[in-house]
Image 1 (cartoon, rainbow, N blue to C red):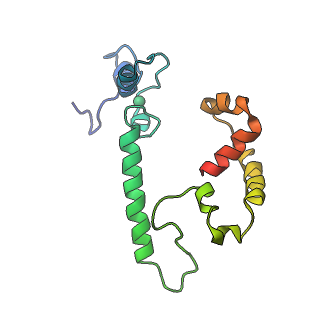
Image 2 (cartoon, rainbow, N blue to C red):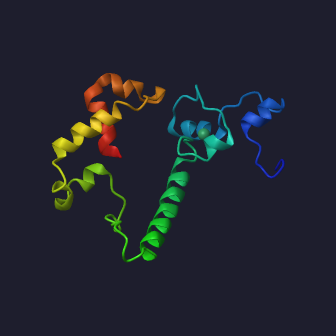
Length: 151
Ligand SMILES: [Zn+2]
């Protein structure tokens, strides 16, 4: 069923009185399959189901993201102006800061210790999400360092 070219979401159907709950049905199905509680489901909106935050769509959305990113990256590299100063350093696969700084060419820029110190300072200026509070409370110092290395 489509309404104005869009698949109706639980949020929309609840709004027009056709459903009782706006909770995401895809998240609910994923949680039920894992035997977890279905309390506190996020609202099923178009933004939600098109994000990796949706438990039912996370694998698909992430695969699409990776596929599109790989295609864009390969094409940017293929059409790069030979005079460009940009250097594509991860053509083989996607890397994060931690795996990049395992390479000699990056260690010549600065040490891992110097990098993590600056990275932690920057991470501490980024507003904490509600979903991150539990991990933050376990060890605030480690939390910011871990966020940085995951980028
Ligand atoms: Zn969902």
